[in-house]
Amino acid sequence: MSAALHLAKPADLDRLTALVAAFHAEVGIEQSDEARRAGLAPLLEGIPHGAAYLLGPARAPMGYIIVTFGWSVEFGGMDGFIDELYLRPAIRKRGIASEALISLPKALAQAGVKALHLEVNRTNGSAQKLYARAGFRAREDYMLMSRRL
Image (cartoon, rainbow, N blue to C red; front, side, top):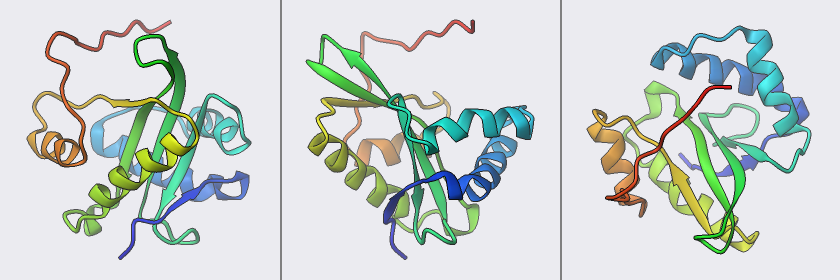
């Protein structure tokens, strides 16, 4: 199996929505399909704030990665944030996520992105190991804080 990344396009909305719904169900995110589609559609239509990538064959994706973009003075330019990463449960533990997490930063760096961030549940040791293998490091003195608006 290959973790080939394919930039999702508007024609992929149904496939991506189904994968996102599966991920949200798995982690307990409650959201209507209408709200989910409204959050995904602009990414597929090319807004500059983010991108969605399908993992594996474009017509039968095994998962997805969504990256959003921002600006960081500290990192010297555009940065990215992995908003969601999901692989179908049946194909996990085969190195696909690791492969994707190694190839994605290379592609983003070529596009001018200076840093890539993500958040991980403090109790999810297997995800922390996956991210560490892909070169992500915890920032000792920092903690992500959020405010819903």
